[in-house]
Length: 255
Length: 248
Ligand SMILES: Nc1ncnc2c1ncn2[C@@H]1O[C@H](COP(=O)(O)OP(=O)(O)OP(=O)(O)O)[C@@H](O)[C@H]1O
Ligand SMILES: [Mg+2]
Image (tube, rainbow over all chains, first blue to last red; front, side):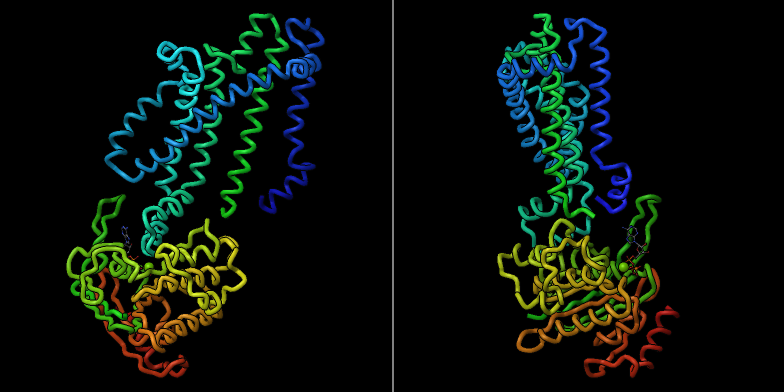
């Protein structure tokens, strides 16, 4: 954070205030609206909080399922996406041949894969994880590929001039040089991973928060549905915070 | 081991990415730098000085003519010829110490511990390049290149962006590093590109004046005053070099 940003933050009465204000306003509006509607249509924040506490075992169980699917799919997207981006950046031939394929595949929304995957793999962690993988893969590859290409040529020449082995060249020069854009891809991919997992679970899955929300609707339990939505939001935001912290630490060298 | 560098009839042209036009940078450079010699190259801005260094470093290939180092043709980048870039080209994500140990680590050798001290970098090891002054940054760039212990050191206006005081200080550091090699070990061959005639006269055994683009070697001045030199006593040759640069 720069000195000017700190000053601006202080002038606003602390950097966290605007974020807290937005959430407080939403809660107030929700409570006001809930006072006018019957609880089986729109339960208030107090009711949902009760549900969260009463149903915490159910919520935790389903959250764990969802997290597991995200971890599987996102982990695979990172593990395959980063080396793939390196290959595309390093080989013009691969870039031409595989690049056009990726452009084509990227245009298909991950959710469009759901029916065919369910047909092939049935309901389960596998198909949900693959949809997460497809959602996260393309932004990760695209941004990392652009990041690899944006490393200043003088630094690459300097690395080779100083005798860098291929391993050192890629791990200690190309990857950190591309890191700012790699992180932007990881963030985009993370957001898409969460959208994809919930979409996959809504269409058909064995457990998970998305499925729980769907069941809640069928059971006429709007409080449970909203509790599920809150859990999704909280989990995604908290994990995004972890990613931001990792990014800040990794990029601490940035001017 | 010390090695000589020769450029014979070296031509190089760039193709402008925007217009597709050919830009003739070098129009036949003939130049021999003896093993262990420190040669300065001066010339107007944009004449092709950086191009010469990049050719010797093996980062560019000559369109015609030949570049040799120690008798063998230069075919690519190598740790025997290390370039200090015009802007330092430090790795911004590595600390001062990590930047300097980059070369030794890549070659599986330990860092010569005297180097940090010699370049006045003790105490700054853990800083990132963004936390350094311009002078410190150039010291790190110089230390990083010296740490590889190359036979040939190529310096592209290493002190160009500095104020007069730090500039003089770093010139002393460079001269010391070069002279120190002399006692016992072989001296490095150095090519120093500079805008400053004063710097050239202070440091170089010979000063090569290059013409405006397309560049050829215009004139070569031998400076045989004892070191360390008092440049005020070298007014005559400085004026002569200045004239040669202006007249191209
Ligand atoms: N990649 C390139 N594409 C096109 N033209 C180039 C390229 N690199 C250099 N040139 C041109 O070649 C000429 C020589 O460039 P060079 O960088 O060697 O000059 P220089 O003597 O080092 O200049 P300076 O003193 O300003 O650093 C310049 O006219 C420059 O515009
Ligand atoms: Mg230059």
